[in-house]
Image (spheres, chains in turn red, purple, green, brown):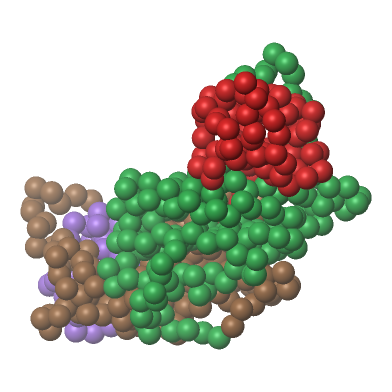
Length: 81
Length: 81
Length: 164
Length: 164
């Protein structure tokens, strides 16, 4: 069943997507599903394990469930410092 | 054979001796001999291994030889930092 | 300006991690860690250097997602305080465009003895680098630019190495 | 005063170790270590704390035999540079009477990467503490005083423990 998910892209993902944020109708159970199904948006061939995800401003796992109305933040590999 | 040795005392050794420096006539082969024979001056019961010694402004060992006219610096246990 | 360190007084310190877009001033920051019981202070600074993996770097652009950088940074500092007998620990990270020689991140720790200050400082910077949602884009002398850890990483990602 | 770290220019640096009788200013000192190739800076400061081994300390008096403290300190820093891939390392130690909270010793190291900066900084302070001819006398709240590592050590020295 399709869910309405707001997706936020960061750093290189945002540059690929061309937008900071968009709301998509998507058939996804987990954060990982969102990442995989939006490959043509964020354009990343990164392994999921290199990236991070947050749901509604809380750090999450790739197998965390997503619900209708959630905001999913897609983080490419971090490089602080 | 007696040698003329100038001895400099530091920190607690100086406080015990009551002088910064004095020249003594002493029958000593090594820096360790100087330390042991001046026990009543520096007043220390420290093991030699806890203390350090310099001869003519170069760090030395307790078994370094002392010569007539040398200046021997007696250093109690250090505590920098 | 020399601020005699004997004249310290505890500053009001609400936040142990901060994301700022102005130059980091380690001299002001270290004063926040003063404590009459502190015998040791360890500090770390990450500076922008002119080279990375053979590329000549002209400047570095930091992107920080502040809400989660702060909450994750607070966790890191709480972990350091739980693991090591320290008194105070703070971290400040820059965002925006930085020039060569600028300070991108500062970590400071005070403790009674030096072992704990060194270990906690190292723990914090190590964790900050791998856990906080912060990205940097290098701008090269040849006019190109690249996101650190991203483009090269993606180029080299082979299907067999992909894992969840 | 904020000195923007982007505006650094190499300072003339003759001496890598200094003994001074005025307050240590880490902000000026760290600037001496700036280098366009430096990505990491690790700093250590020893602060006067208000307690040692159960004694309430009011102030601390440092005695330094400068000629040998400097020559031994130069050896320590040369060893650090030989062992670790660092760019610059300096150390400054105070002499004279210091109050609680004052900085007694500062060590700063810059390097391309953080591992080397941390390890060299730790090496230098560890060696400085055990090798340089520096002594400190604690002045206690009760009016007494004592040389650190000396009097208590002498009290507990038993003939059987004496060794060359």
